[in-house]
Amino acid sequence: MHGNPLADIRYAFLDTVNSGDTIIVPPQGSNVKIRVLSALVVMSGAVGVRFTGTASGNLSAQFPVLANGGFVLPLNTYGWLETAPNEGLNVNLSSGTAGGVQVCWYPIKAAL
Image (cartoon, rainbow, N blue to C red; front, side, top):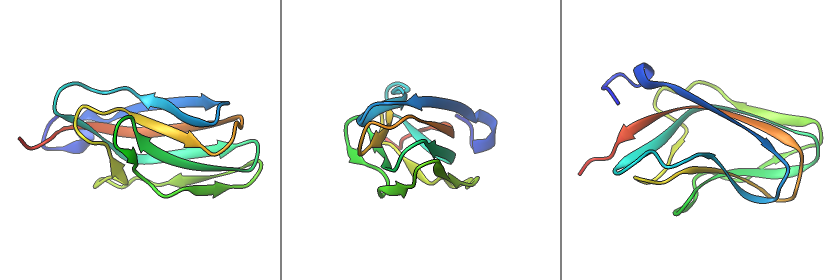
């Protein structure tokens, strides 16, 4: 967790099948937030996809994805979204649909 966000980049992926929340990045410890720099989502069926915190709820809008479609959130060094301190990152699907989600993220210390 340096001043340079690119120094601590990490990656996570999830093969989805269930509706509702599924954790993609677990909580990273006391006072640490998860900031998502980029994401890739591809789904086999039509579904709404959003990112949520494991405790705080919605972190993004719901993105409608068509069958065999998806979206990319390209690299944003300021981040697309972030969790609250000591909270994990979920992917939420509006219905059970097979697909894949990949994120590029880094941990940041929350201000005390």
